[in-house]
Image (cartoon, rainbow, N blue to C red; front, side, top):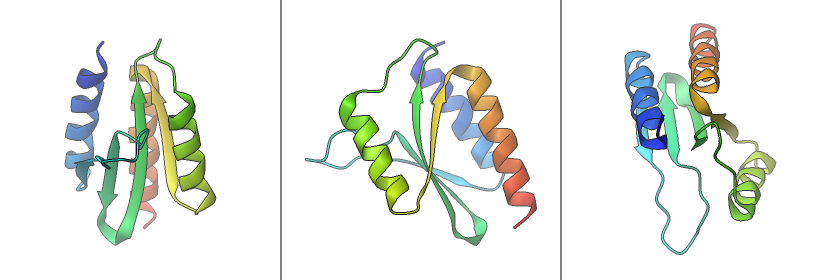
Length: 97
């Protein structure tokens, strides 16, 4: 499965949960996460996507750690199994909101 297919699948699932998906593009600031998922109640997740064999670059690791340091919800997703686990996590968190 290609990363774009994984991203499309996740975007559809996020929408079905009542959230919105935004592509994170930050000119001059490389390595930002692929997606920002936003849900009612102000729950925001920064998500970096990879195929099962994909690797996180050094700048991506740094960017994710910086967001975590600031208290942001950050998720790393490698492959469909982790994507499904993320959707389950999001369902559980949204229910408790």
